[in-house]
Image (cartoon, rainbow, N blue to C red; front, side, top):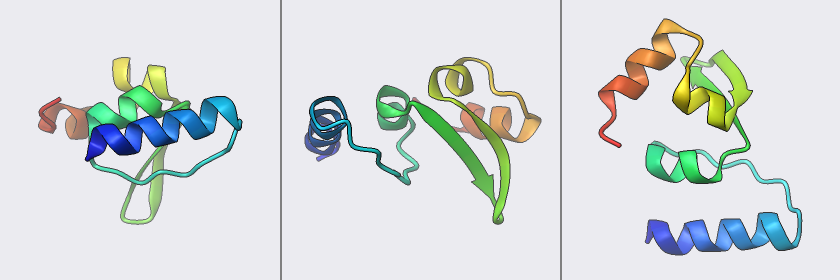
Length: 72
């Protein structure tokens, strides 16, 4: 199912240049589609950063802990 959603999201963003807000815990999916990541916990924004930077070099300890806990 994720692949189908990823395909649709990619199509909409590339062809139609549509801006989308996607909320997910699927980090593999998010890493592939995110231009920008807002990492939130308890209603507080911990990071607002480009997607490629977030997944390779998170700036906060909480984001690093979260990514380390995910199996992706």
